[in-house]
Length: 502
Image (tube, rainbow, N blue to C red; front, top):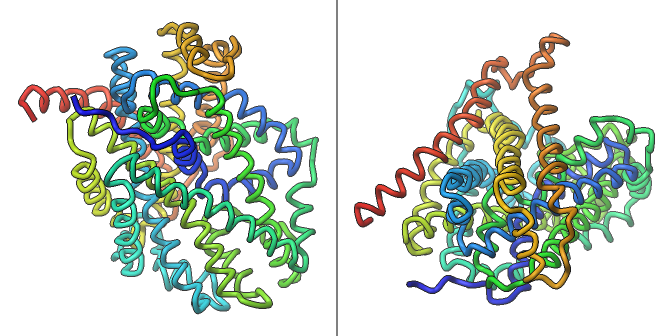
């Protein structure tokens, strides 16, 4: 029997898992969500969301991988043979996310180069959407492939392959650089940002608490959603990474370190982002709300505009910003592919190098679709549905099965036995009641916004030139096609290959 690969140290595992959990969402989503949902007051539901959903789910997945020494499909098979499909579902979620996420990493690679000459000078939005991406009129107009994005994709997939081709042993070395590096760069951005004119006004907007907002249901949903999507659960990543730890390794303290690190980096990112947005508003003579944005608008329009207006060393600040994004993004990209590799290696006995080559090649060609003129729209569409329904429903299945169909108390006692800190009964109640209730609430709220609200308001969610029908189509693909693949096709395919001696 081939000995299972191991993380070189406990610190390497923590760094890798923090890198997986801490990604672009911490930089371009959390600051805006926090600002738009009560400012400083948002930290209250945000921290409670960690206690109710983030930490319990990290404990669950970390414990599963470590106890059963397998990636997601193998771990769930050891829990119950009927649950193998749930492991493949989470693996397939990572597979889908990796396809379009790599394109965003490619954008960052390109913008790192464009920062040298401030290529977007005076027209950041037009440069990004037209010159760089050549965005079409809507998702139905696929158009041609963007050459700069393809170049970025080649760099992205080469970097990913070279970083994971030897599994945890090589990743252990790489994360010593790629995880601390963006944090250091983020600190540099904060120091530079708060010295700019108007920066403190931006930070004030970010932190000023609006406690009245806590009475809004939407604010609480936003807090739980942010935590839910930022800790890296539901995508086979944590289970896969934990499977390379020794069985007797600590679980509880490690889980707290991972979630606390993720939360701290998110809050830090808010200072970096809003100090620069305050400067941008000051320079343009507008209010903070007029420049405050999230997502791609922040990274590729608002920040490049602010970089251009820097009084000195604008290219240097641009390089620092996009290098920060790049290192955060690459850590997440590594984790998606590593989760897929682990599931494949455990099920089909394929070497890590061969699996990495196959997976990266397949994902590269699939990601070319999102490098087309219409790809910008499709990234938004697929990202919305795979996160709001694919990831959440995986986590719902995990919590319900462990809470109700498995001996949750026995599992908790095992975690306590191998951990430095005792895990209390509160975790049992989270698995049975609180965490599933939170997830169901998020799914229902998302479904209401996407599908049901139109019957009350008459307003239908659309993407570009696509009517609501496309929403329903993608939704059905996520909640029907992926589970069918996971529970029926993947397990049967694995058994067929094994029986044939493959």
